[in-house]
Length: 148
Image 1 (cartoon, rainbow, N blue to C red):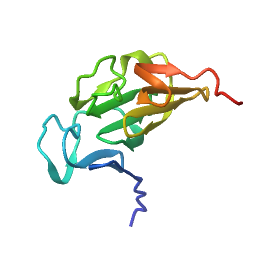
Image 2 (cartoon, one colour; image 1 turned 120 degrees about the vertical axis):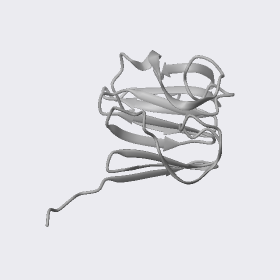
Image 3 (tube, rainbow, N blue to C red; image 1 turned 60 degrees about the vertical axis):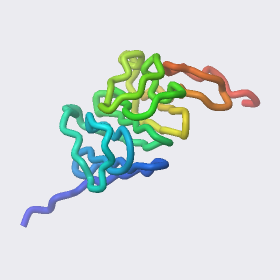
Image 4 (cartoon, helix red, strand yellow; image 1 turned 135 degrees about the vertical axis):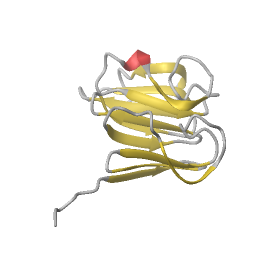
């Protein structure tokens, strides 16, 4: 029998769960889950439109982020505080490429309650959304951390 390895990553947000099982992205929960619909999902729903290999996922308050092997970042869900990083406050029901990050190779994403962050392959930190650092509708490079 062939030894098959299953990669499993899951992230829980306030009202939803995002997981990768063997490079297949699924979501479950309430609201805008990246499925193209706004109906709640009580069972894992496969996201069929992703053509890139997913390397990291993160579930925030009411939004989700994914990064891919190609270094791209996609976001879906609530966006009233700019937490998707799309340059506006429009929520989306499908995973949307962050075009302002297309020149950056991202290796890890993190979604907070109303903010998001990522780390580039050059070990740079980018933040967006609303939190104690202010409000950014698109990702901004953190140039320094006060006290460091």
